[in-house]
Length: 116
Length: 222
Image (cartoon, rainbow over all chains, first blue to last red; front, top):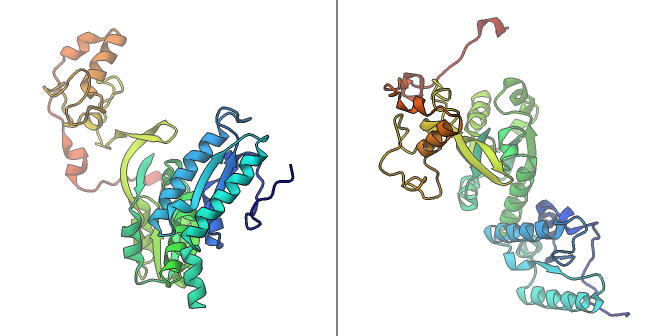
């Protein structure tokens, strides 16, 4: 297909979105990420049965944590798609990049740069 | 296990306002099992505090430590080499652990990051419920394993009361009536005649009413 998607999206491969723990998402933000999104298989299609459903619940929890500490829960999202949906993958990458660009940089990173 | 809930983030942040070097303490026992204060929750809270303070332009240094237990001196003493490197201790252990660490290091404040709530069980993954109030005089033999002290809002001994409606408690429709459960259990075990026995007044002096309790076994003392 040779589809292009924004170069600022950095991919971290995991065997299943069920592997993504809350702390992994938080660490990404702590290390300066402006946004994080999980791309899992379609619900009902998980090889491990419920990995993607668990991931979705964790994303909801992280949203709450990020709202609490002022980073903003909107910066994290969960998408599901099948591995045959390259088109949608590129679309989602563009959509998320646009959304985060509108939100601006991670406030913690911004403050650190101001104080440096 | 002892079940606790994490305090609201704003409350924790307010407590930590004057400090920039924090020892964040977790416990590997009960609070780990109820997913409130184990090493995982310590990592999450530490990350949350760091991000918040970074955002506010007042960065903090946090050391994350999770003790095997916070309620035994041998583990608490393991903090000795480094506890004084930190201005304050924020503890995610239960109320016992928070106090015990404070008793050992009297020149350090130990702040609570959790509200210790009850002694309970894991009903299912992510659901914990109260079962025991430690009244010091167990009646579970008479009530066939269902505690009226804990599970009845009024702790009555000859129930149910008039507030029992369709098997639930008037205090909360989600709460089963303890005495309904007890009667059902009598029936199940074919022991309904036991229900006719009037329970005498309970001696509460073994409970909290007698002040803080202590247990000593001389043969175990070193």
